[in-house]
Length: 401
Figure 1 (tube, rainbow, N blue to C red):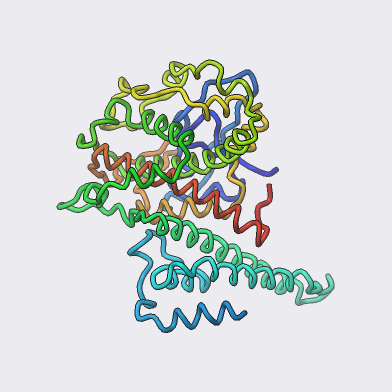
Figure 2: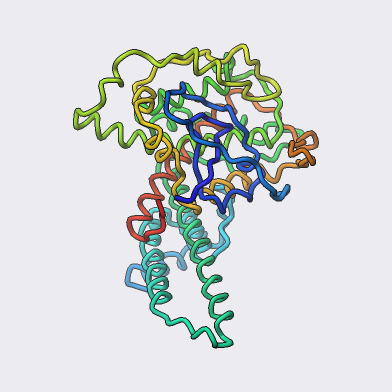
């Protein structure tokens, strides 16, 4: 398996992602180490990738029905910006954007149709015979094939995104569309939105939500219950926390599915209910979540034992690494693009020593209640991403591991 490890501001379980997708975004590429740690066991821990050179700036009847319904809508020319931060650019993505706005209930049918077309195109591409090695058209042929592969991958990414957005819409949860701060709203619009914490909580199992609560406690510390207190942080750090939490949500949904299945079949390991995770180890290995506005003295406040945490800790090293792997390049790219669309490109510079200078990056003032909302949304985004990646892969195989 060709993978490099990305951390969610560095959990000791790590997050693995395809190696070729590492050097892209200023958020995932700058995520450091020591974010949320599980107690170390005696197996070898997951390795972390070191920052490398990177850019600083970051046709069926069903088809006919969907298209007819879309063309008859007066809202079809609207923008997806009102419901999600990332603007879809491919023809497939723009088509699904319009359906999301005008007829969101038709998105699954439209996706089925688009996946069938992608599969047909890929099959036709495989059946074509490559020109002989002596042909002057060989280079051109391969270039055209490469372009088509890139186009299909982009369409696939945007299909995944449309499905994630549609799941938020089905849950009646609105995504934060931008973090652009202003003189009247320094929080970038987060603090002015009504709370959706209860809606987001209902989208997770009780065991998974216990883990999410611990994740929040490690980020917010003793300010977790003080929703009105304000922290001043730069967008780079906020974006790191958001992207890290998306990856955490992806991992959490993956292990929770296995946990729920084994619980139903009554084959959970005894270690799940025996003893409690040593919270002191979790806290002692967790550094200050932010450099501004949050005191490390509060870390550990609100942490509690979790059956799902104990279950995860029963994994051997190889299983843990496999479950901490983001399986597709498309999913990694989607996390990067969504985070950048939400927070914008951070103003950072990379020194010769490899350190990151974010002193010129824009600062936002956001309440701890707003930070909690950001993290809950991000974790849910990651959970939905796991769901839709699995769904799409069952119809159009693209996950390599």
